[in-house]
Image 1 (tube, rainbow, N blue to C red):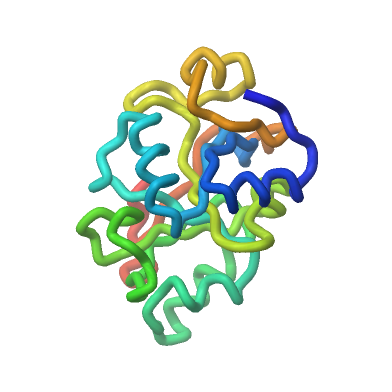
Image 2 (cartoon, rainbow, N blue to C red; image 1 turned 45 degrees about the horizontal axis):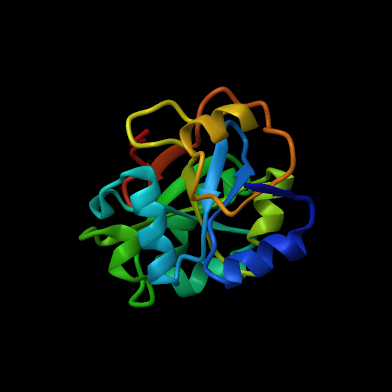
Amino acid sequence: MKTINQFEDAWQLLHEGKIIAYPTEAVYGLGCDPFNQKAVEQLLALKRRAVSKGFIILIADWSQLTPLIDSLPDKYLAPVRATWPGPVTWLFPKSDRIPDWLCGNQETVAIRMSAHPIAHGLSARGPVVSTSANISAASPARDPEELLRQFPEGIDALLAGELGGASQPSAIYDVQTGVRLR
């Protein structure tokens, strides 16, 4: 796994269908182009994760949200606006644009607009898969050494940067009920 320092390099790798690791608020994340089925399938295999669990989609701004979700009354978006950008993931009714390989058989899509400078910058050119850097059921990587221990192969690059200092991965809420799921 090579270390890269530039968003341009990361964006190019994502465009090529590669998997990259990057720092987030609390743990290292793994990402790929959410609309590249082969890349998502490789990420599922790497993590030993069932497609039915779905993934979080990382976005950088509000314009990226609209094509990913079904329209909602503004009252549902007020709590989202109060928490974004930040370490909060929201489940939205998914649009027809969201492929099944991102959500399994669920009718919702998990989306987060991160305030972490690396995670935010990574998604500046388009949505990115955001999943914790760990094999399913293992603890997420909190340093590059643990990342390499869990994934000696399969990650194409690490986008350099520091974790954000949060102790827990992002909270997850349902946008229509306001119920916290994690």
